[in-house]
Image (cartoon, rainbow, N blue to C red; front, side, top):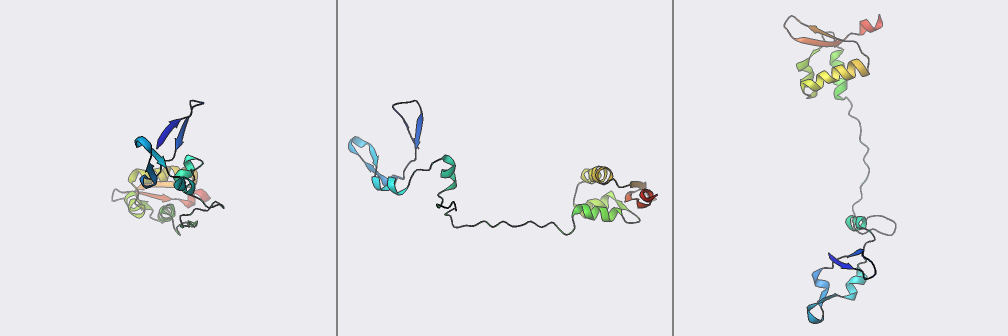
Length: 146
């Protein structure tokens, strides 16, 4: 990019650098830009326009690629739905079963149980230790109805 100072102010004016093929050698080793290349490619009005590329008069991009908006659909069954379904089973679910079903880490499952199931959804979550020593979590709907 060539930088030149204006004679009337201290402002710096940036001029767009032209390709080397359009530059002709002038007298005493100086270079001058040919008039045909300057007229063919007008300088962008702002740096943002220079980055975006040229646009058509109606504002459409000239690159030829059109980006269509794709509506993202929600999965039929989210991970939260899977956890809630397992917690509603009569036996409930262990932490390891919930980890396998969702792919979450243990602290994420515990956080979901505490923050979402108990606090946000207001469900009655019970935790029991079974005979085999595993802790099982389940949603107790009978306590909420009573």
